[in-house]
Image (cartoon, rainbow, N blue to C red; front, side):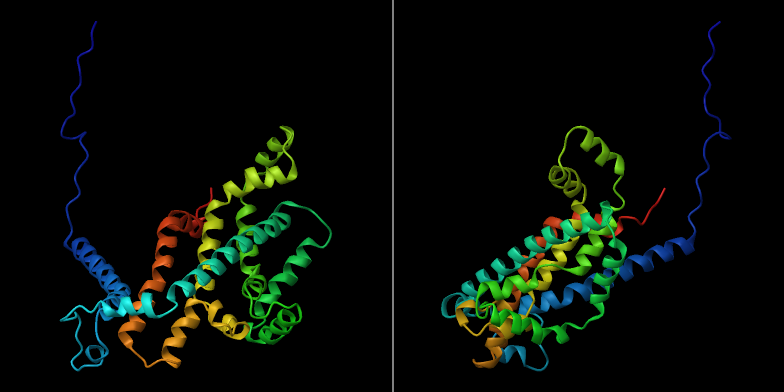
Length: 293
């Protein structure tokens, strides 16, 4: 005997919750607060963008002009034509990329040893390494300079790159991430005949992509904005980086805030591009370990 189809009754249908005025007001306040935060965060970039197309007298006028009345392209033309800005840009990009790649590789090797290997004094050595974070960077400036000078690396790319390789915080970050990787993958790879280097290169590194991207963004940003160490180790203008070049605009030349704003805007573009390409891995690296179970 065929069963008759059953239709949902008014009692079986889920009841729609009434919209509460308090919830609507709370949502409006949240979105208003988020919009305010967006304005606060984007405000400096919009101001720099607007200032890069102004003359100096427009920037110091009262009341200030938010948007330029006349767009001035000479600021960008002066930077690209009359200043060695391209040389500064290439130097900064070279140093930042090499230091980032070298630091990520060195930190990943050290983190793999501390996370996956058993050897005598491992935890003690890791703890001693973490204590170096408490040493102020200014305290290490003179010893690092003396070592760099005696090695013949003063006023060279090597002097800019080699002392910056390696990062204790990077080792800590990658170690904490690698400890969350299941050991069954390592056992399976070893059973399949994978070597130790192959295990690290083919298994551990690809799975650690979020942490590697997070460390890459942090190191690249720090090196791109680094001013103190290049100022100490470099006096050849052909090796100047962007932070040194921007400081030069305010020291040796007459201060032109329009030119300075244009140079600062161009110098921030690579950081935005790097973050846009790696933001997915960066956010994953920040939230790893937040949810367990």
